[in-house]
Every structure is written in C-alpha cells, then in structure tokens.
Length: 250
Image (cartoon, rainbow, N blue to C red; front, top):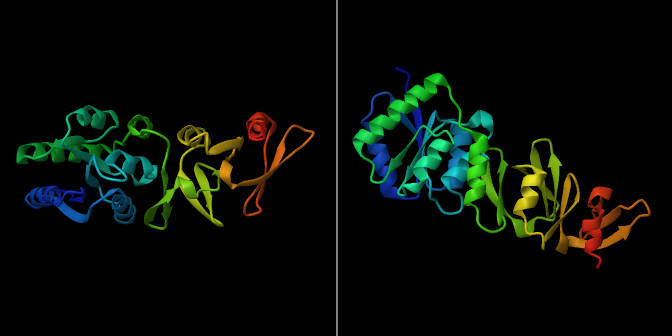
C-alpha cells in the first residue's frame, strides 16, 4: 500500500490535533506538515507537494477555497475540506474535492473520506479549477482588498492600496508596487471586475492604473493618451479605452 503524504491546515489547534490523531491511527498515511492559516497552507503545499490536504473552509485572511484557487494546476493535491457549516458540503463537491468532514470529526467519517482519497489518487482525478474560481467569486464581498503573491515557496499579501499599476504577463498579472514587481494568478478581465472603479481605471487591454498614482495625462490626436505616474513611469492608453481615460479629465 502506497503511503499517503498528508498536510493538515486549520486555524483551530483542537481540530489539527483531532485530524493528526486520526491520521496516526490510519495505516498507510503520514503527516508531512501542519499549517494554521491560508498563507502557511500555500507555502507548505508548494514546498512539500503533499498527496492529500485536510483544510478548513473558514479561516481568517484566506479561506480554504481561496488557497486552492491560488495554486498552480500542477501543484494541486487531493483535498478534503473541514467545515462546521453544512452549506459548504455541496460546494466542496462542486469544486471536485474528495470529501468534506464536519466538526467534530468522527472516526467513521474520517475513514470514509480517506478511502475516497485513495481512490481519487489512484485515478489521478483533479479539482475543477473553473468551479473553484466561480465559487471564490461568489464568496467575495465588496471590492478586492489584497492580492496573494509568491516569491519562491513563500506567499504573502500585497494590499490593493499599495498597487500603482497592473499589466498582463502570460497567464499571470504583474503588480507594480514601489519600484518592485510581484506576480499573481488571474486575468485582466477578472481583476478589473474585482477592483473599485473609483480607484482604478483600465487604460489598455493589458494595463490597469491606480487613479491616485497618476501625475499627468497627455492627449494625442490619434485618440489615445500618455499617462505619467507619480514615479515617472509613462504608459500609453489604447483607443479602445480612451473614453475611460478622458473621463478622468472631466
């Protein structure tokens, strides 16, 4: 029997202890790490590459669904969500999770979930990233307040208020912050919908600018504009988004 390498992530120490005890009593499983929050989960999944993750849905800052959303497709492990709320059970299955466990976790339900995990790992089925993205959007309230960015195996938050401008870089977004750049997952269409239009304006199909970072705007006869930011960076707007830039001058 191939051993399942498992990671436990929950902000409640008692829940981590409960899952740890159940794993230790289960043949063919080993614990490779434990995390207390979403950022730690991202770091540990990236560095340890576990086969299976037991992760709480409700965690401060970055929840369980948000963690899975931020992972690269090739890094996705099998997932068993832990929750105290019944409404998340259906959602867990909707995104392709192996199973969900209600708190307090019983030995019989734990055994059932691990059995499903073994089957999933043997079939090498994957989570539905599109479903996770959709679910994450439904759970978000208000405009985006921060981005999750990665440096090596470490993940951290960048507050939206610190971002000066954003451009597209293949399948990622590049955040420009105080002379530094950070990469995060997402598309221009997606991030435009998440940002407050009173604070950010899209000037090009591949560029969004923080309005309060704009120093000057110069119009061109061609219909476009040159936007100069407070740090001296100059960006060109396209004709497609010229009306949005012109609207800032009214």
